[in-house]
Every structure is written in structure tokens, then in C-alpha cells.
View 1 (cartoon, rainbow, N blue to C red):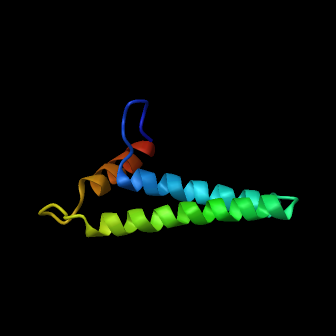
View 2: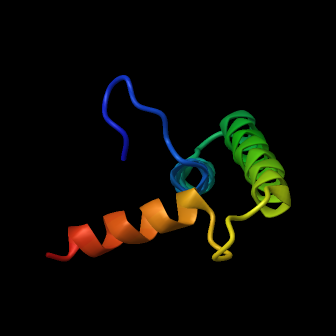
Length: 84
């Protein structure tokens, strides 16, 4: 993930939003009151809406000549570095 003063790539943002949505769903499952459960379900739906919007934006972005976007290349490179 990005350090202080750096921006997240689109793929990193998608991963973060998915994590936030999953956490909100988990909090909804654990909630003891209907009010809290509803609030967490609403929060998860908001994160999922942002995920959908960002996915549509990423899909509509022009790709480089080799067919890969810079964000995709960066995410793969970071994943490879994690396993060294």
C-alpha cells in the first residue's frame, strides 16, 4: 500500500474498498441491535457502490500499446516483490 504522501493506484483502491465492504458486512453480522446492523449494511452498500463506479472507470480507461494499464503492471510488480 501507499505510504504517507503517496496516492493509491486504482487497483489498490479497489482492494481497499473491498476490504472495507467486507469489514462492514462482518460488523453487520456481529451487531446486536437492528439499528447497528442496518447502519453497517448501508455502509457496506456504499463501499460496494464505490467499487462498481471505480471498476467502470478502470474498464473505460485507455490501455497502453501492450494492452496493460500502468496500475495493472504496478500491482503485479508489488505482488511479486511481496513473495521474495
